[in-house]
Length: 439
Image 1 (cartoon, helix red, strand yellow):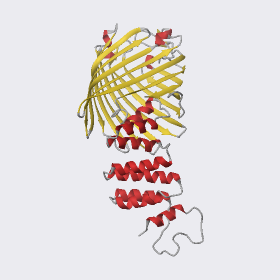
Image 2 (tube, helix red, strand yellow; image 1 turned 135 degrees about the vertical axis):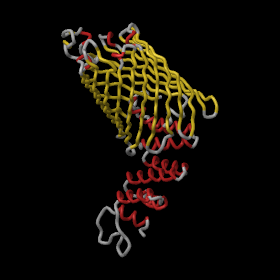
Image 3 (tube, one colour; image 1 turned 45 degrees about the vertical axis):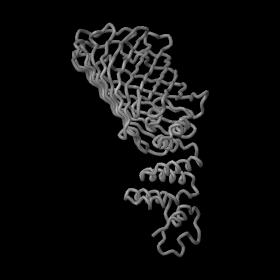
Image 4 (spheres, helix red, strand yellow; image 1 turned 120 degrees about the horizontal axis):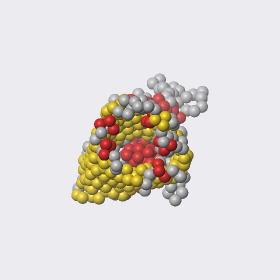
């Protein structure tokens, strides 16, 4: 049987020597640190937690600091799997004592502290993990994965302000004419592609008020504004809010809510809506997190009764840790707009994949999304039913350094929509530079 000490000697041997650590030992073999990690993983999978722990304990003494950190992180996972959360916390603290900038370990520590009832310490660890600032899309991944910001903190939110050149502020076709069943129509200039300088502000906040035991009242709201210099006729402002009880159990959290929404386009009121939503948020695990949502909204479009109707939506969000510093998110959403005028209604399917990686000095993120839109009836003017395929690509970076709590962010996005009806075809590219903050 190979002892842990012999494993350590084998992994630490960096230079060839006349007499290796196995010299004179008949039952001794040498192995690299990578092989020891693989063996430890196999031992744990086979139910031999003691054997896996012995190997990992040896690796905590490896000369390579990255191997020591990985061994401690895995030991924390072993301890938690055996129900020893306090032991898992000790190993994570040991890891962070040597490498305090390991964000994934700090998020894990915060999650375990929250599960053991140490709420104030959990919030401190989460705040330290987010000191560098995160753009709103990545921040939601991190906060949902840790399940601390949204699950234990009473008040919180995010603010992001960006600006940059936009090749298509109104997301319109570049063609001058469109074919109809009557004759080719010439589009007004406002119905064709317009470029300009765009400014976007996003604010989100929530409040959790304890009612009794595991029951709280959760209130959430947000405001988003897309404003365009010199072209205010394309300004788009959206406001939403919701409130309802939050029930907590071992299986996760259940959140029914009443929701309201308002939207303005240009300087005019565009739409309003009221409805209900229901979501289930799973209890966080070491590597994954799941949320399922459903909603129904009755919408009213100002000055366009044909677009009035009911929106039905269902969504699934799955977060997964791919490594110590890398997190992925998968979004899947289906929606139906049952408009008063059937031809104006649509069925829609949306999928998105996001990756976020912490490089220490900055956070890098990227995403790709696909949207399929299919009309629910024939548009008489065009003699066909709408059929769109849209692809959205994006990437960006946010600096670790902050200014009064705000972190610089740079983001590039590109959208391409193809449709069997020309007015729904467009290309759009935008570069955003700005600041983001969690609070």
